[in-house]
Structures are given as C-alpha cells and as structure tokens.
Length: 310
Ligand SMILES: Cc1cc2nc3c(=O)[nH]c(=O)nc-3n(C[C@H](O)[C@H](O)[C@H](O)COP(=O)(O)OP(=O)(O)OC[C@H]3O[C@@H](n4cnc5c(N)ncnc54)[C@H](O)[C@@H]3O)c2cc1C
Image 1 (cartoon, protein in one colour):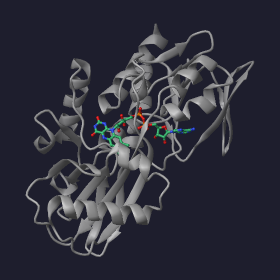
Image 2 (tube, rainbow, N blue to C red; image 1 turned 180 degrees about the vertical axis):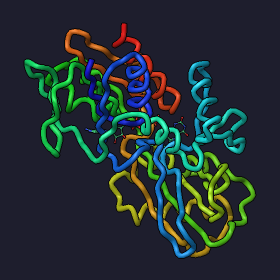
Image 3 (cartoon, rainbow, N blue to C red; image 1 turned 90 degrees about the horizontal axis):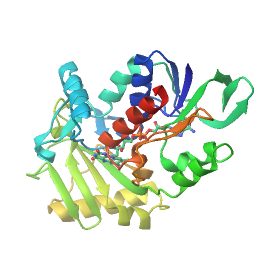
C-alpha cells in the first residue's frame, strides 16, 4: 500500500509510524521548512548568541497509556523531559519542543517545503498537485493538517469530510518572543491569565535550554482574535507592555523581539478520533478530531492508521 500523508506534524507522523510498522510505503509532504508544525521552535540570531523559542505548544501531558509509553520512549532517547514548572505531569521536547517531531521525521520519508495544492482522483490512484509539480499516484491519501486546511483539499472528493472540518473552528494565538542579555527579576517561570496574556513562560527555564534569558508570551484567544489582523510590530509592542504590567518589571532593551501570528492555534474538538473513507482511500487525522492538545494529535494519527490497516 502506497500512502501519501499531507502534513508532517505530530498527527501525520504518528499515522506514518503506525502504517510503516504495518508494512505500508509511506511518504509525507509538508509545506513547512522543517520539523515542528504547531510544536515548532524558532531560532533567532542575537548579539549574545542564538536564541531559541518554543513558539507553538508550550508543554504536553500524557494521560493515555499508549501515549505515555511513547513519551517514555522519547524521554529515554533524550528528546523530551519533565518540566514541573508547568505542572506535575508536564513534559517538553529537549533541547527544543520540536525534538520529538524531529525524531519521528528522521525515521520517515518527509519532503519539506512542499505545499499540496490539490488532490486529483485518477484511474491509477491519487495524484497530488504541489507547487513543484505532480506527485506519483498513491493508493491512499491522509490529510493531517489543521481543520481549516482540510476543506480546500477534501471538498471535491468527500464533501462531508470537508463539512466536518469546516464546522470545527480553531482559535488564533498571537505569540511574542523576547530575549534579554540578563535574567529578568521575575521569580515565577510561568504566568497564566493576566489580562491580555493567556500564558507567559521563561523559555530558558525549560530543561536542556541555553542560558540566554528568553520568554514566550501568548495572548489569550479573545485578545488574539481582536488583534488578529494587526501588524506584528504593533502586537509585539502591546504584548510587551502587557507583560511588563503583569510582572511589574521595567523591561530592558530586548536582544530579540518578534511576534508570530498563529491563525489556527487551538483546535476545536470534533470528538471523532479520525475520519476514514475506505471507498475513496481518503482519511483525515489531526488534533481537531479529538481536542486541542499534543496528545490528541498523536492519538488521532494512530487511530486513523488502525482504521486503515483494519
Ligand atoms: C501557540 C500554540 C500553543 C499551544 N500550546 C499547547 C500546549 O501547551 N499543550 C498542548 O498539548 N498543545 C498545545 N498546542 C497545540 C498543539 O501544538 C497541537 O495540538 C499539535 O501540535 C497539533 O498537531 P497536528 O499534527 O494535528 O497539526 P500541526 O502540528 O499543525 O501539523 C500540520 C502540518 O500540516 C502542514 N500543512 C498544512 N497544510 C498543508 C498543505 N496544504 N500541504 C503541505 N503541508 C501542509 C503544516 O505545515 C503542519 O506542519 C498549542 C498550539 C499552538 C499553536
């Protein structure tokens, strides 16, 4: 069975891993420059050296026994570690949040920088249209993207799949990244729910990080929606001010300061596990099919693989 997976985030890679173990020939395509998806890490050059920020998912928990076993395997491999500052059961990728994704992608055939623009149902299988041209026919196709990015690919072939994705809305998240030459006089490594700020964390306090003082500040979903179309510099200024107010600290000049707009950050929760149309050989997985968490993405990918194998 030759399978193409669109999206090499955790859901796509979890699906790919399970399918490959069952003997399928799996290829993944991702429009991103490298491993991460919404578990990405951003690198920035500063006068004091490179700053690295986890600007998507901040930490993850493992409540399902199978996902807990996967996390334990990652911990043994040194690509994740507990981070008690976020909670007794909180884990983070090490040395950066994208490390587990990098590890899974290292064992898979992923083409990065490759946006899939359309699916074509041909007599010899599924053909994928990408900016770089058409890809070989595949027996099966998996869409492992955020819900909003499923509809344009699925609508023509499986309208009910596209409708289900269209009914599942994600909330946006403006994220500010700051690096400083010295440690800020803020005792806590994590702040939650302070006015416009939903979450702020001293990124450099996570295990395995470099010493350079770095902070990741995420606006609340409501604030992010209200300021969604604003310029990134304007948002960076407003969030930095809100952070200064929340901590009572006069911020020194930042070595690096940038804001990232996640249009589809916090997924909805369709409660379906995965979607699979055996008659078409077309399926969907992603956090949005279960809930807005890292663990849900992994479970959804594995769920779809099981349905496909069955
Ligand atoms: C700001 C933020 C904070 C978060 N905080 C937490 C947290 O603290 N704890 C937690 O558990 N979860 C958190 N999450 C959610 C968590 O990151 C996600 O649930 C999880 O990473 C989703 O994985 P996924 O594989 O379903 O989707 P993604 O990681 O989004 O992967 C989808 C992939 O599809 C690719 N793609 C999309 N369209 C195409 C196309 N047409 N062609 C090719 N490739 C395509 C994208 O490039 C992407 O790599 C957060 C997310 C964000 C953004």
